[in-house]
Structure formats: C-alpha cells, structure tokens
Length: 504
Image 1 (spheres, rainbow, N blue to C red):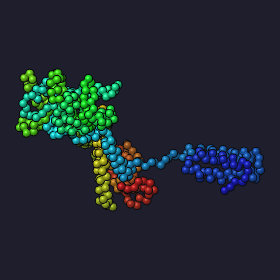
Image 2: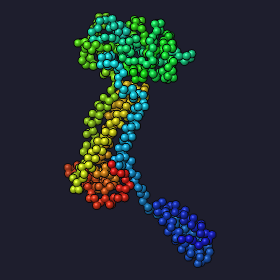
Image 3: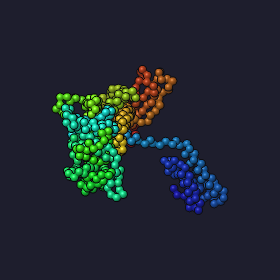
Image 4: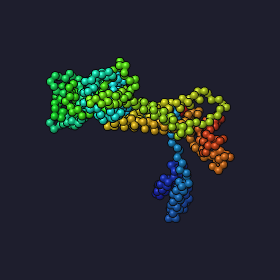
C-alpha cells in the first residue's frame, strides 16, 4: 500500500522504521506493516482532507511518537525466550565421534612427544631378568651412587658363582671443548669399556677404538642433534673433555639409556681404568647373573650377602632391570582397578527402572543401548591411558619417579571422573533413540514427598517417553523411572524431533 506523495511522508515513514528497531526481531516485519498501514489512514484523515497545516502535522507527529511507545512496551512484555542450543553430544553418533576424536588426539600426541615414546617402548637391554643393579640402600632406581670403586674391583678379581660379569660407571659434570669459546657443560658417565656389551646395546655409527690410549666418547642422540646439528662427520673426531682428549666413536639413540643418572655422553675407559680412580669413589654397578647357576635366586629383587675388601660381611640389594624399568601400562592397570573400587562409593551404579513396554521393543533396540554404553567405556580407556602418558612425560626434564606418580594420580582421577560421566550420561538418554532428554520440569511439592511423587521430569524429543527422577529417594521411589509413551504421541514432538540429531 503506497502513501500519497507529500514532502513529509518520507520523514514519517523513516520515524516508523526507527521505532521498529525497538521491536523484537521476529515480530518486526508484522509490526512495521501494521503501523505503516495505520500511517496511511492517519495521513489521509489529517493532511489530505484538512489540508497541510500545523495542526495536521502535529497529529501525524503524535501518531509517530506513539509508535515508539508501542514498540518499547512490546519489547518489555515479550519474554526473552531463546531456543535452546542443541547439546553437542545430543545424539549417540555425536558422542561416539567426540570420544573417538579425543582418543585419536591423545594417541597422536603420544607418537609426537619423545618422552612418551621412550616410556612406552620395550626395554632396549638384552635379557633384563639376568641384569642386576646392585646398591646398598635398596633404591637402585634413584640416581645416587652407592658402590665404591674398591668394592667393584674386589668383585671383578674374586671368583664368582652368581655373576658372569660386572660393569661400573659414575656420573660427573664436564666441559666439552668443541671449538674456541664454545665449551658446553654436559653430564658424562665415566664407565668401564664393557658397559654397553654387558647391557646388550648396539651403538650406531660406532667405530673400533684405536690403540692410541685415547678414551672413547659415545654421544647421546639429543646432544648430537642439539650441539652438533646431527653432523655424522663428528664420528672419529678428537675433542677435549675437561682437560683430556677423547675420541667420538658413536651415537646412542634416545631411549637406550634407562639406568640411574641423567647422561649426555659416555666416556668408555680401558679395562684398567678402575684402578686409576680413588677407592672411595662411588658409582653404579651393573652385573650379569649366571642363569645356569643353581644358586641364582628365582625372584627379581633379593639381597646379597658378600665379603668386603676388609673381609667384613655386608649386604647389598640386587634389583633386576626387568623390575627396574618403568611399566606405564602396569600403572594404568592398577589405577583402573582402584577407580573401579572407588566408583560405587562416589556415584550410584543403577541406570534406573525401565519397565516392560507393551508394544514390545525389538531386541536390536535393547541391545543397541548396551552396545552404546560399552562403546563409551571402551573409548574412555585409551583416552585416559594416552592422556595420562602425555601429561606425565610431556617434558623430558621430569624425572622417571615423578612421571610415574603423575601418571598414576592423573589416570586415577580421570578414570573416576570418566566412569561417573558415562553412567550419568547413560541415565539421561532415551532407551529407544539414545538421544539426550530435554526440557526438565519440576513436578510435585517437597512437603508431599512421602504422599505423592516429587522430582524432575524430562522428555524425549522424539516422543518415546518421559523420565521421572525423584528429588529424594524413598522406599517406593528409590531410583529414576522411565515411562514409555504410546506411538500416537510422536506427532506432538515431530517438530522437535526434526531439529534433533539423527538416530544412532
């Protein structure tokens, strides 16, 4: 409907459009159309019939001001109800996809983080059950040297019945002179020449040491990449370690060193090097047990009583490297057992009462509900396992002991939280379509809790039924109950169901 052409019509119509900005968006087109029509009649009555005068313009202006008052009043009286956003895990397919993405993400982080790869790889040593770490304090896994060089020399010179060979090493901080004014400070393990042979570790790029009396140096892969830029030409070069020349003979891959002490390089001394160091110098001793000996103890941790150089009898703690090596999966298994024990004390286990449906649901629908529950539990396990590993070994500066504690605490808390969430999520889903229930409504009065039902009622958007959750558990209503609806009710939920996610 067009307005008669006058000079003030455009101004009046612009005023109505400004007033329309105060109207709620969904009501604005209809409101503007109604007031535009009224403006035409007002303009016809005041201007066209009475002529253009001050009085007629005043009446039209008053009409336009009334539009502002109406628009503001309409906004105040319109309830601000926004359509609730669908839950991101509404459908079972969305929930399964989200958990799968989490599992893949944590697994990819495990492959990318070098500390995690080192923790989960198998031991690099040969026959770890017969490799023994000997100490005097029962804590051979801590980086504290406890065996004196004199005791090591005494064991090597003495006839043995339990062990076939011994290796000795001690750690210290040295300056590695690479170039003028370039001497980084590194941690060096001064070890007997048979250390890697005893462990059964192959050193890549290793060259045979020349018989020139110069000690040989094996670099860690991390030091080789960060300090020497992974230059393969470093093999065979002679450098200066502290005040003495050394020859680089090989690179030890990351993860090949799982013994006590954080080491950047290994200085392999000749066989008689132990005789040149003070007798009171303390270090670490690794021994290979003779598996054919009848006196070999069957367990991985045991105590050895043996004479000392002064003929006094002393006891030493022997720990198999198979028990000494970290076991991330064993830690996770133990925390999983603890979480299952703590779960009944932190949340209710029943999933609710689901009475028999008179329309007899198909067995596939009933089975699908349990498959969905076990699928969530199956996806949670790798998420927590890889996630706790990523957290515990995110930084290579974390000690192995701290990493084990961090993995245990994080995996236990995450498992307990995930199991609780799984049960709660399953209780809030429709047993037919497995979608999350919506529109919670308060029903009943707390004062009549023992005379009538009092709690929360949720509804399935697909019209399959209602869920009644009691506010207080009683003897006759102790857990939530599901109420199946007749198929004829589905027509009332058609619009809601069309906006929801698809079935599982």
